[in-house]
Length: 412
Image (tube, rainbow, N blue to C red):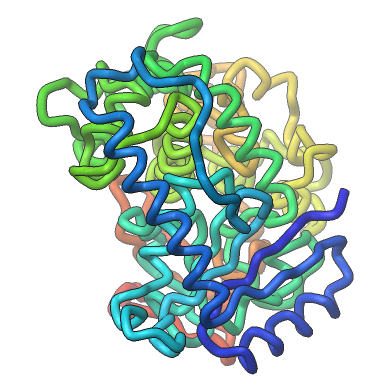
């Protein structure tokens, strides 16, 4: 299936360079560039939709009274895009009002008032190839992925074929539109279900699988002015929480709520909950703690690197399913990679390291967050991430072509 990519920029020359670089990847995408006045025209359509939603929907309590058909007067290029790439600095567009136009503003409008798939913003937080040692995602941004323009055409962002640099936090971008739309379809049926229950962190089939492990820092994202975190629904989040819609904006219908919630809550799970590796744990970090779960020789680097695959056909992620199946995180669509409930695993006496911790062995290799690969301990540099977790000591290869910031995070 060919994916449609919409490239939003203020400079035609830069857009053409980016388009050429993406074409050379030959990964089954079609690219359309929106530059200058063409981009402004499409943003204006989104702004008109936002204004119309305010007038038609009115009160936040009138969800059930809205007409089912959206009365959008004009079609929009964003609706048909599987992936949108947006330059943060758009002030070069030829229009007087463009001085206030930013990629973040476009990302917000596109997410809330179009049927766009995945949104990638570049050059908002860094301008050169940088690895963020905090490991904290930019939750304030309505883009699903934030990176620098020199990485847009990096093969490792789009596929599992990559060179030396490939941050572990990247998904496989070509797989993300389908995952996002599956999430939106799931959420539209659960609009009034508490988020923590719907994403599998409390209640439901398992009795609080993460126990008391969720911290205040985890829950700030879904903070509600009147409700406890465990009671906040998807509708509550989009309409009333600070990380949802702007105060005066309104969602047109439940499908809009589902699209916004799927993207925002999904980013929270990917960029806050999972990176700490103390609520959910992914395969390479689990292998480092419990090497006995590995399938294959523990002295083979290839055995360890099998845990880093993100493709669906490697569902076991190089681990023994007989020991991990019961603790697998569900619904799995919420994450771009396999994960397991760490509190349940840490108590499973079926696992050698839990049953007899004094006989545990040091792993032969350590996982590098900047290359998505394992390496010998004497080849890496340790750093301390800024995460709500006890598992903050991580490793990077520290490649010479990459900026590592903030440098103070490197362990002394």
